[in-house]
Length: 167
Image: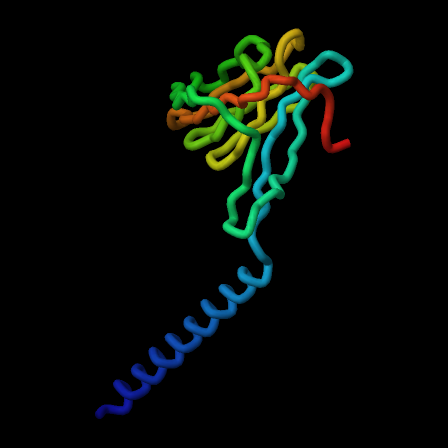
């Protein structure tokens, strides 16, 4: 075998071994960090009568990695909305229609709360809607560029919990 070919094979072999070692090390680091927390945005009515948001961690996962949320009812809806035009203003303020979960499947949305906060929702986010009338509510803007796709799941117990649960 020519010396240059042997040298090339040796360099490729060392390179593959190096990449395998780096990949294994990276996987070990990820495994050591544990699972990424699952977060939920809770929309609620504050003592001031305005809508606010708090980010809370879903922590009640069982041994099968299932988190039991509040009991839901039938009538879940899959909803799709088109992006708003660039530089479009927010829609009107409105309270939530009922206590419900909203699971964000696709698209991006900005939400402004009558209490002053703003958040951006992305695929994978979970919302717990509890800012019901008589609050002024929140308003939304679909950022695009793709359609926003969400799953609305009504909660069986419609008893509203006012104010923050994490303070």
